[in-house]
Amino acid sequence: MFLGIDVGTSGVKAVILGDDGRVLDSASAPLDVQTPAPLWSEQDPDQWWAATGSAIRKMSPKLREAVMAIGLSGQMHGATLLVVCLQQSGLVFELVAAPIQELRHGQESEA
View 1: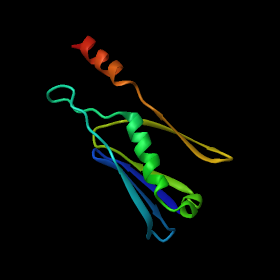
View 2: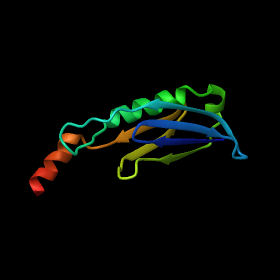
View 3: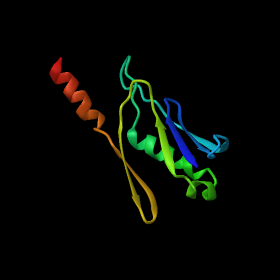
């Protein structure tokens, strides 16, 4: 079985597919978009992670245990690194993202 995760602008969608490509289960969790200044749109990577966990936990535990591969899809112009490691207790995910304040500071210093 396969787990598909799509981190979109309005929410995270997750799906479990069987080996034949049939959708066996699916779930989603909403996301917020912050607009701290005109023409700015931001999202908190911690919220992406929390919504991803929420969407996955909504699906059947039995199906989740049978997942052998994960496919990821994300926002059109966003980039986030994802580190995945397999432990005895199951899959562990860790989001790696720079705090938005660092990104803003870097943009301001280049301007």
